[in-house]
Length: 157
Image (cartoon, rainbow, N blue to C red):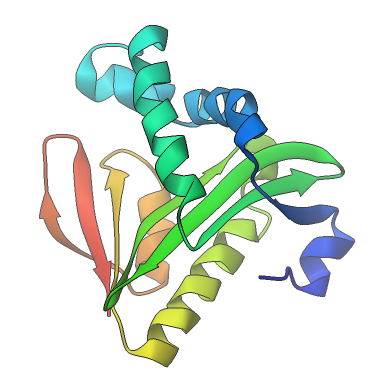
């Protein structure tokens, strides 16, 4: 997975995630999702969140792709997905506010939709109902196929 020239010229780089990255992963995930957890589940509780995210981080380390996103050398986000038998799942994009709206999310979505198209497999992801990232996913052809109290389940095929 390689960033296009327009993103690298604007200061973006990617690197593989390592086990030692959990602390910054947790901090970025908290900044990205705390307001949604507060909205749908009462409030973010660090002890509970650390436990849940330790498990999530371990799963993502085993996925097909798990990248750190840097902007001018500063770690500003993470992107992961997993190619499974007949589908792509485990899709997550977390980016700090300063890195949003600059094309990286679109690059990530283009990357996985091209893989799905070439292999003729669907992509599954979930997004908090009030998260504006839903608009990005819809631009790339994702459709809501189910929902819970807090999330939309989306599919691309």
